[in-house]
Image (cartoon, rainbow over all chains, first blue to last red; front, side, top):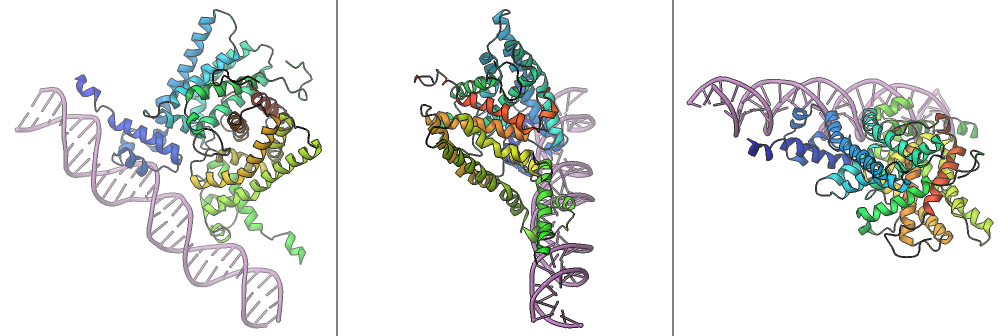
Length: 227
Length: 227
DNA sequence: TTATCATTCAAACGTTCGTTTGAATGCCAC
DNA sequence: GTGGCATTCAAACGAACGTTTGAATGATAA
């Protein structure tokens, strides 16, 4: 019956994933123990190994649950933009918004745990463990290639290797901002209420990133024409 | 005698700190065990507790060895700039270069371990463990306040809270770039040989960050005048 | 009612963790 | 040479780790 299906099906799995998202974010992958995770999820200690096989597999499942969909969302948004543009070039601003939109939408989802995931993701970019890096790298790869092509088309005069660096910088800006929203507070003074307002954040991030992307080429590097 | 002083004085301490810098960077603070650290340093297992007291104290010592000096260097560089300017306003570019210079100089120090430290630092910004965050926060605080004042003076028309956000973004760009230089490779295509060339990196980072800092205010947020 | 099967549970597994201990070592002043 | 002292060493500590086990549980289908 589907009556049974709607309520407790996969309940334990979901509780574990939610707890893992939160605990991994708060304590790191090594710092959050199986006992902490299962206590938070209010399930038996053995449940993780039963449902996922191992702690590493759980980590992978935490990312798979959201990251693939998130990047597919990004690509779909970009596809839609290009369809609407009907062959005309997109503005860098629009491409940037298409990329960060998925992140910001998710960080507004405090109840569903999306916010936890976004912050966890920010941590994972600088994660030392190689399997995690590889996993994330391959989950991002299609979207990154797609956006690289879109930026290249929008900015034909920007050298390719320069574009790659600037995408790198943009991504760093986004990742750090999302990860650090309530961790390291190196610079005091931002209004706390703006912190999770995705609209405000979107405007600020887009302004900063697109200005950086369009920056004149540093003359001292190449003697080529400055844009 | 000073003959004795130059060679083995603090040798064990230094070997431990160097090994810790490298191992913490590669495996994280929890992932690098005392046995790994002491094996890498080729010292006895008990040496860490003897010389530093505990693993946590070692972590703190790793940061203290370089971070305070690094931020002092930043402030000194800014002081010098302002002295040379003799009351005239500094350009945002110059302030940015003063900030990132210390990082880039250190990342060129591959032999001395400075590069390891810089990457470790990039990781630490998103570190979940609270004591580490607090430690880093308080070590950065004076430099951050100093640079905030310098930027505010150079950009009097930029609202203060906007400046704080943009400093946040700039710092994220720098931190992520330094931390991720050989970890997550989300965007393929950058020339590997540029990766550790501080001059090239300085030009690229400064161009990106200063353009972002000077970006026009996002019109949708405030109805104030755009710069 | 009974057999089946996925799931949950308490308990224990062996391993590794950070830390402590007390003896051994080697250098220096006397 | 001898005593003092900082340092190094091998060994062990209890605690916590991820994982495994085999029995208990409870719903489903015959």
